[in-house]
Amino acid sequence: MQSSTLIRQLTKQPLVRDLSVEAAQTVLALRYSILCRRGGRDPMPELERRWGNILAARRFRLVVEAVAHIWPDPFAVAPPCCPRLSFDEALLAATVGAAVCGDRVGFDLLTAEMLGSDAREMLFTALENFIRARAPGQV
Image (cartoon, rainbow, N blue to C red; front, side):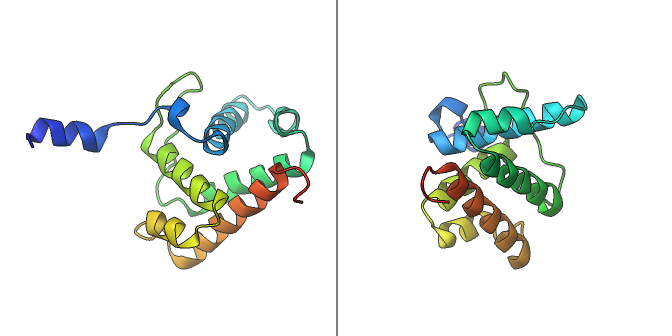
């Protein structure tokens, strides 16, 4: 394999449209939340409307707070209209996929190099609680 092909494969950023519904909605909601925060607005009313209940919006806010607290570097977020994911967004989308499946081992494999065990526990729990709140009849 040529080095240029390898570099292209390693730096390829996935598209939002290729994500699962849960992962895409989470990434887009994160982008929206950050945009609101920068503009001094509260994202909660829109998040509540998006998911149909205040509990899901509140639990998503806890996911955002967990990410802000535990991520080792500033979390890179693409602009809201960008079809490609930042590398941090791609990792978050993968962790959402693992949490949706209840795959703690897969989640740990994705995050073990950058997060300690307490940080992984905090994020996985926040994601699981958010996912349960989004699912009708499972709260």
